[in-house]
Image (cartoon, rainbow over all chains, first blue to last red; front, side, top):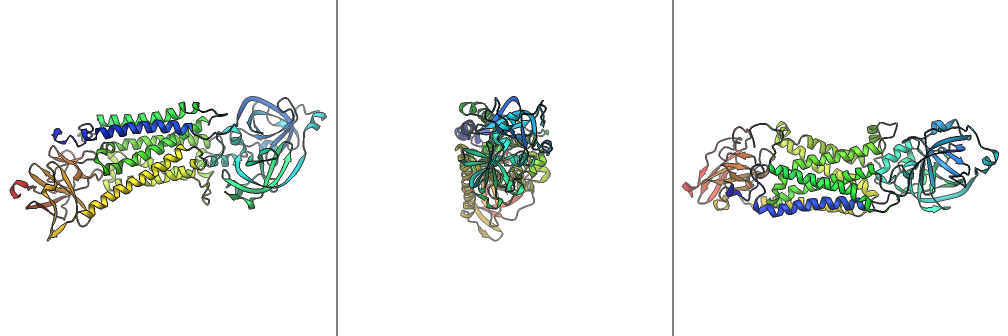
Length: 256
Length: 351
């Protein structure tokens, strides 16, 4: 019986019929080659996630805390930042430090943690042995006066770019941008992580802006719907120390 | 087919099939995760958890695309039928790969937050009013749900439990699942993709699948249109005896659209429904083996004279009455209840 049906496949009786053997062998090899080739080349050609990353050496800083639109600290010149610096602050995971910062606004504080860096934007993930607290030792008058607390209005700008959560963008996730990351970014922003705007072209040498609404408040849900999309938006830019803040006008947002 | 109940009736073909499928998956994942990234010089690499979710996500897409190619290929060329035989195992493997992808996504993007990860998944990207930025996660969840339902109900126990028509209809959900998966990829990963390979693969697979299904559908409709059945009272002149090889079947459409299968064997002719009671496989494309009609898809068997599976099996299909006049085969288009005995037409006596 089997000999009469050598060209007919019945899986529980016999192997692949002679007439199909060449084709099935070819298809099998093609499948394995497809999987191997696709696995390698899809992986090898993934877009560059950018240079952001954690620097896991623990650091502590003393400086002046501001809480609007998001918690940040103006750090006096020191070994890490010889010209002083403005550090964005975030908590562990997808949490901001608004609750801890609220009662310390405008004060000299100590804060420790690990740095996230990408380009000229730095964020401190607060934690460890030096929690966000009123400074124990304070700052000398000379050091305090060296902190640049000036606010300079740079006028109204129309920028093209993407709204991101500042923590993932600076390297907590690589990549921390794009539509595929949008839900994660929204979750971070809802948790209090500072929002940043990443422009396609620099303003005053910077492509990164701390984001606020026109009144200087944190962005709300109405603006969050544009997170991760490529948008064009008008707003006022102001310089605070070495940090640029982009106060955007929600009415002008245009998805590109 | 076997008497004793066993969850999976393994045989050498299934072992080889599954080993090839596993080899393909393991090669894909290992090359994706271990070898390719180290070849690239970058300031920073993609996060390993994101690399993992991409590896398993893209792998699931390719596997499901391959699975959906098998059906139309087997319709267009029966030499592909051995690929159809164990396709369900490939489907279950695909679900496992897709579930791994989803697990990595949830355990990376939706953790580290005060919000429960599953609540976060369903609540952190929900603005369905926009095109760009559409919550593509919903498409992925739907696709995974379809794969889950199909994987869980893939066993023949559920086929019997639900009945073949319902089971078949249920498993046609795979097309909705695949369409949703394409949308998941288009509205998600591909929105930010600057790499050429995966977008090209998505386009090639989508277009290939569409063309293969159109070609297979065209073949089916052409087949139905080209067959002319001439009615003579209750009897329809439907085929020539010489059209049927010995131990073979012939699929013939009736005027109402129903297809029957006529078999020539041991100097006799019998006719049954063309649809196998297992998964609607085309019985007329099968053979007579050990005196039984044998389905080309999974080898289910029926006696040609009464449409009943040999004991101890209980499946049965409709039978039809035949006549043979001067080499012309005539059929009474009224189906007998499944399992009804009909005396075969003896070829030697009438031809």
